[in-house]
Length: 494
Image (cartoon, rainbow, N blue to C red; front, side, top):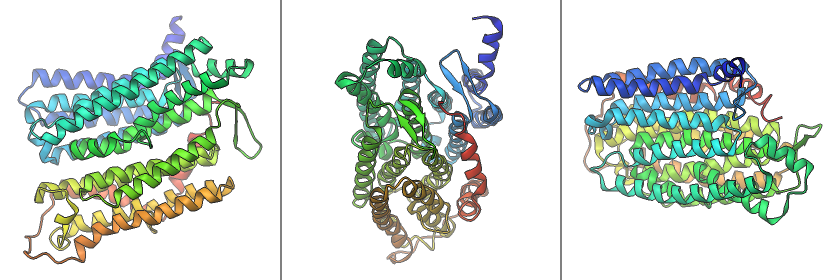
């Protein structure tokens, strides 16, 4: 590799390089200024804002770095989702009683979050199976530790242990699948594998089995059934800040990887109506539809019985993964637009719900739905905010959640997947019950002993408004995110 190509590749890796430098800066600052932990979130957010500038630059690029990563608008879109999620989670951490109690380990906390961010950035752009595996491991190892970060809480340690066990199995299965694909094709580059599949008869049981094994590793990250078993326990046991981060950023990176894996490896041609024609190796559409129906149905019905709000939101996130998988299953640019619009809105409404739950838990010391009875008047601002976030997650107009579901259903109807659209609609109706149940406890059940009004700091009000305003505005004026989504899928894959 000559100097010019090296320089070009490095230009395409600016966001990853920026996060790597930021990670080192945070580690060094924590070592040198051990008594100044309050500066760590400021440094982290500042560094992520600089990284965001480099991400925005990538919306106009279309190139390859070291034949391992693609720099394009599609990857930039998901990196932006990850960076925004990380900034909000760091802001949440400043007010989190769980993280405040671990003051002596806050340097490690912010370092590990940045390690997760770097892993997600690489996952969003990777086009080589070995780099995909290493990126997933970087993300996973950081998240394993953060899931059990509050060592004094028993459920945190349990969550971390379960996460490690499930993650280790998923990682091993995925690596075995990658080794089989390499043995059959002689390459780990997705573009090379695609050209080999087009020129040789490499289908059959062995390749299909290997493809399923790789899918299981990706499915673990995006919490789709039947690879979801870790999600409820880890989401309930981990600190709320980490739960919120996993529910949005990790899922976004996983979906970016899933789309690239299918679109690049198995792509044959594009129909005149904009639908992908895939190589006749694996029936991806039928498989994804089956998994999505299983995921959304299991997530919604399991959420009905949950008493813990974090656990309920965990099953809710599984159900949302099912909706997103359904949009991928359309196998068209319209489906991808639905995925990107959905994630743009899901970022705000899901993080907002977790943040309000965290603030209420800080005050009442509980995340149980029954302990919310009669709290509406005591937590007036938080109660209204939580109501809007939950109604948006349910997909009710005029919130942005309705627009997310609308674009999903438009993509399904355009693809003549009417039966699947009806199943998704019925699942949405089921979801109304467990979201509204929380609001019923807040406002329609009287508490025996009145609680003093709960105040919210000015800073936390600003954070809630930063999440709340997009949920309301994008419910009415959603043209900008739709246009951004359309421009972001122009050059993915082929």
